[in-house]
Length: 94
Image: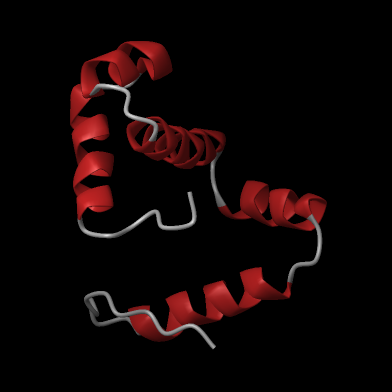
């Protein structure tokens, strides 16, 4: 079981995130995951998640932040945010 270690905002955040992750781990196909994500997220949110994963991948490949900003079409602040997360050891699966 996954345990969320983020900040609790008073509405059982840890419990809810843990349930979400457990649900994701039960999915067996990409089609099931795509269906769940499109049910949970707006098209814009899904696009933002996909962009962040692409940004992380490009940063790991050595692309500059400015090149990524123009290539992906996002604000430099978004690239900086993903870069900071990478430096904190996040996006390990990429």
